[in-house]
Image 1 (cartoon, rainbow, N blue to C red):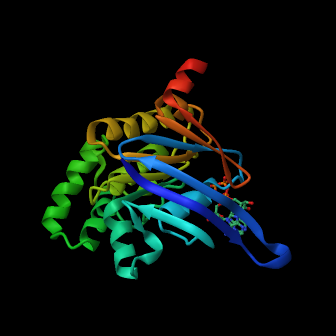
Image 2 (cartoon, rainbow, N blue to C red):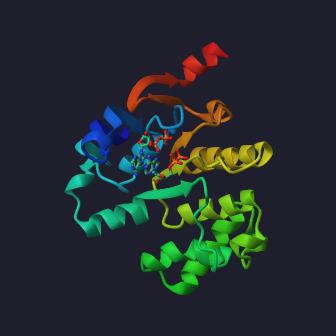
Length: 234
Ligand code: ADP
Ligand code: ADP
């Protein structure tokens, strides 16, 4: 089953002489329940593709379908719903709200979605416990390590039970061991909850857990590697 499809996606930044073609006709399919890594050199277009798939920015040409719906056709309200309920986002820099506690960061998307505060708090505690941070719920991001902050961000991404988690360099700011723990956590969410994981990454440790790898070069999908091919090459 296809959960995300892109057809001939072109994204250009700037105009005329200064124009940069970040994506140059990307057509791909991402399957429900898979763990997909998007790899490629710096500047190859990974973040741009991430932004297109997540409905955070619009392509100049081509289309992005999430659950068979062309997201360019969504009303602003429907797009906000998609970003709140269908997709959870994780970033290299965690993007937590610094003046809020871990629990408040996790409950915010639920309150935004209309959940009652007591329900949001109960679910927030469950999610923090799931990522191993139940005991740190009252701490602010500055009082947590990088790995702990990323765990809070993962709990937040799960707030409204998304079908898809989009992760942009989730281990990029973490040391090796902490990065591995975050990868293992994402793998666990994928296998136990069936969440589709789409991760843009430089991290070769991701190769071990990925079902497929998209290799991006100069704004194009240069190669798709499957698990079987990765295992055969190992
Ligand atoms: P990656 O994530 O693989 O490092 P990006 O998608 O960030 O690649 O960038 C692809 C290309 O688009 C690069 O040449 C980058 O400089 C350019 N680019 C990305 N974002 C912008 C932007 N907002 N304005 C102008 N150029 C951009
Ligand atoms: P990543 O580490 O994911 O590759 P970058 O460091 O390339 O991300 O980009 C971080 C932010 O800067 C993104 O929002 C991207 O759109 C923007 N950006 C990247 N390249 C450029 C550029 N040449 N001009 C303007 N903005 C850029």
